[in-house]
Amino acid sequence: MIQQPEVDLVRSSIQLSAARAALQSFGLNPNQHSLDDACRDIESVRESAVQMGDQPLAKACWCMETIAIAMVQYVNAFSLMKRGKYYDGWCALERSQNAIWHLLRHYQDEGDMFSIEFIQRSCAQFQGLYPYRWFTSPEVVAQEIYCDICDMRILPRSQCGHEVGEIYDGRMCSRRVGKIDLVAVALVANPRQKFSVVFIKDEQTGEQIDHYDYCLVEYVMRGLVSPWDDWSYEWRKALHPHERYGKLGRNDLCPCESGLKYKYCCKRLPGIVRPHLRVHFADNPPADLPQFVFTDDISTRNPLPVENGGSITFSSTLLRAGAWGWSPSRYPRLFGDEVTRDVVHEAALTS
Ligand SMILES: [Zn+2]
Ligand SMILES: [Zn+2]
Image 1 (cartoon, rainbow, N blue to C red):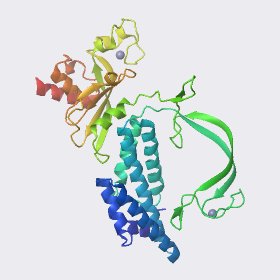
Image 2: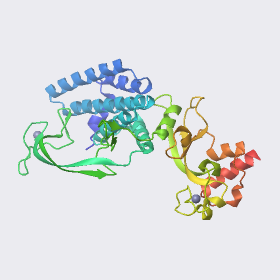
Image 3: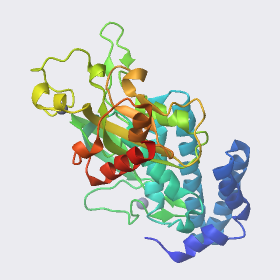
Image 4: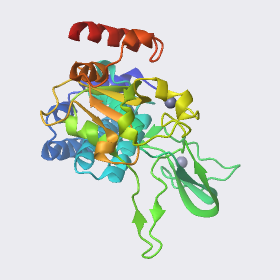
């Protein structure tokens, strides 16, 4: 439950002022030393708060520690993704999200003082661009469960009184599982925790192979300089030149995945209708980032177009390049009203 005294202490307590300043500057300039100092500060304030029986201050320390975890894991995820370590980056994003999930039960970051809202949004956006769709989820029966605050064994009719997720002496209560029986492993699309991504195995060596295509994440990472650069994206539809799909027979299935034959579908249009990711970077991306790319230029596995948004849209770029030669008014309903207006507007600019 969110209680105001703790929230106020996080935001203005004098004992925590050095740690607070370090966390806020970490948002601008990630510096591991100042953060380590801040964590030591928080720990010593917590110790004395517990000794004095000051539960609100101890809880405020837990909040600040959790904010630090969310920040560090987010920055860590960013640097892992930058280095092409996408699965490790995914796990760090999940750790950051988990920390925030625990935090928000006790603390609202009004005014985004510690960039919590930003981190949460950016993590979710990255996760949305990852290719993972299936996860393993173990079904287990816990034989022994202990409270990690008081160490008491929890049985159906004997509870210790500590509530999971609540904060006692500046620590969050969770359950420790002593012995478990694994019943089954399920494949799920929406797991409770997102770490257990399904990978394939090399039959010969038994080694795990990362067979996923991370081109969408890769493109965004090329456009971002700092973990604190703002960005967003939206999915739209765009037309791909017919030539990109090689020799298509009239009776082949249309590459737009409508399930229709090509001759009844996009053959009649100036291009093949495909998903289109439009990315907006709040700060100018590096100059070597292409204005738009087809993802099969990066990788041949899934032909989704990706593009650097900024102020230039995919459609306008192509119209200017004269690659399409189609009249938007002939297909006014193809993209829905909003996008059509966009296209018409850009067409008027270029004609
Ligand atoms: Zn307990
Ligand atoms: Zn089609």
